[in-house]
Structures are given as C-alpha cells and as structure tokens.
Image (cartoon, rainbow, N blue to C red; front, top):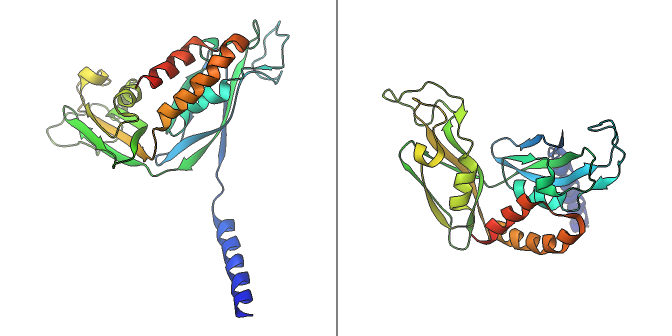
Length: 255
C-alpha cells in the first residue's frame, strides 16, 4: 500500500515539474530567392533545425507576375540547412539555386526555415589581440564551434587604460569561417587573434577573439558530411544539387 501511494506521489510530482518547465520555443524565418536568411539563438543556446523548404509551396509568399508553379521544393533543403546551421548560435544562408539546386525553373522561390534554440553544454574562451587562443577537449571528444567573434562587442573583455577603443560594435565577417576551418572536429586547436588572420574590422580599436564551443563525443561534422555526400550523389541526376553545397560538403570530408 505504501509503495502504491509513493508511486502515485512521485508520478504526480514528476508531472508537476514537467508542467513547470518552459516549453522550447519554435522560431521561423523566411526570405525570398537571392536574399540572405539569418538564424540566431541567445548565448548558451544552439540552433536545432526542424523544417526547411527551398522552393514554392505557398502562392502568397514571394509572388511575382508570371509565376505559374506553386508546388515545388528542393529535396535536399533540410539536409543542407541542418549541415550549415545545427549546433551553431548564429547562421546565415543564401536562398539561391547555387546552394539548393533549382526545383522549378523560372519561378521565384523562397527559403522557409523552422528551428528551435536548444540549451547546450557550451564553453567560452577568449584571447586578446595578438595573443593565441588555445582550446582543448578531453580524450575521446572533439571540438565543435558554435560561435566566434574577432572584433569588439563587449566593452569589458580585454579592456584596460592603455588599450584604445573607438568602437564596441565591430566584428570580422570571417570570424566563424576561420575558426571553424582550424578547429572543428579536432581535439585541440590554436588560433592567432590578429588582423592578419581575420582582417581589421575596426581600425584603431583593441580587439579580441571570443569562441563558444562544445566538446562532442564523436566527429559529428565529418560523419554528417559523409552521410550527406552519399545522399547528394544519388540526387544530383534527379534534381540538380547546387554546386556550392557539394563543394562545402567535399571540404568537410577532407578535414
């Protein structure tokens, strides 16, 4: 009897706790063909792609005179968006045939993405300008870069009386791509925090490199690249996978 009562109590308690947890919020972004889609999560959270469509399935979006096709979509859109954006804090994607292929020639298409922001075990490390950022993961795990900034977005980081600051709102557009190329899927990496590596986004301002990263149990990016390569190889003859997407995945396989 006591066991039965205790079971009911625990079940009720668990139900109450779960009911009080905040639900995961779903976000949606849509841009027309030739525009750039931007996805972002707050610090400490990363993108988890739920749905993605490149094509035209709703006649109300991105209308143009002469459009006759309203039921087309690229079969590889979800895979490409997941590959580009999952586990990152921010992500930009060009809505173009070069990335996704052209599922309906002559029709103005759109990129429609639904995603959630998932809390992750994200670590942050920074290095002041002209220092070297050194990040490591334990044995058996590998680096996955969630976000990177070279510039100055926080007035506190790398501040001091002898450090000139003309702007607290600048960052290099190459920040993420440079750090990803040097660190993703490795156990340890070193990145020089200097203008030679990233360019100078704010001349005369003392900058820093700040990187958010996770240590994953497997080389997720490389495994995903190989999986996607096999998918795309079978789809190329069918719907014309975009050249940019194929090149991106090929570069991941070679790391």
